[in-house]
Figure 1 (spheres, helix red, strand yellow):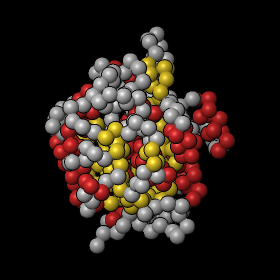
Figure 2: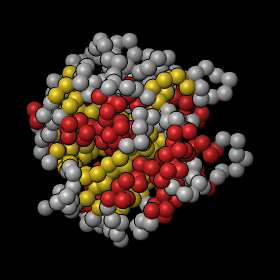
Figure 3: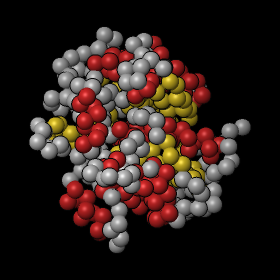
Length: 377
């Protein structure tokens, strides 16, 4: 019989705040981190969700004495610190990093490849700082990385190799990332509107997030969420475009719900990917309808945080758990008029709800799709 796996602690660092409570209160008030930023010299400003560097530096200096860290590393350290204070690190504690680009900013104006740009070196630097004893694990699979990292932790703990895991995720806005998405003509000309008829594209965001996952929660935990099921499926459709029939996402959701032994009628809330691009939003709507989930309250957090790449899945999982703890559904910001061909129950205002079972989904470049089912205990 497989061990039950629980998330019992988490934290995040975003443009809306440097802890979960600050973020939650900002979301309740409808605040968004998305605003105009000048990211590439001599080019027009983009709508993006970016952490204030001065505030980040100030917060970092309050908590750390060392300064030999990149901006991204400081985000990671701040997100993980409260969890380290609350939980012990042993020889059976896993360290898992989710990111898509890591320290990609180090490449700018460098004639040679810096060591810090390798994702394995980034993971090792953070793990060594906090004294982890096991070899760090990197999950880097486009924009499903954050959701997959939870699944990797769950499955590795169930094998018995580890008893618990710290999962962290981060990506930052960089000229490299903006240029890449701009080449697809996917950058929105206004704050993004997932699933909305008048959406113009995505907003890039940045964040760091951390969760603690264990098979042996203490009696004193403030909350527990059981990771009931997970799945990752690649639809192998295109290097950047998702399957038009939603095959990969449909299969991921079906597998995760089958393992969780949860029916479509039992899901109380869907934290969807919702990038506000034409093909992604349409594909998700088709997949949710194929699973008969079209009546389940659903939101995308991209209107608040932008698309945080490898951090998005972990950050949005944290916010979904906060929603369950507060029995409150947060709206899909900027949604006004349905812009997909299939019906969806898009949340449009803060509303009370009894949330026990959560479905979290993500999709990304290369045809990757992932889903997890969480249960509030």
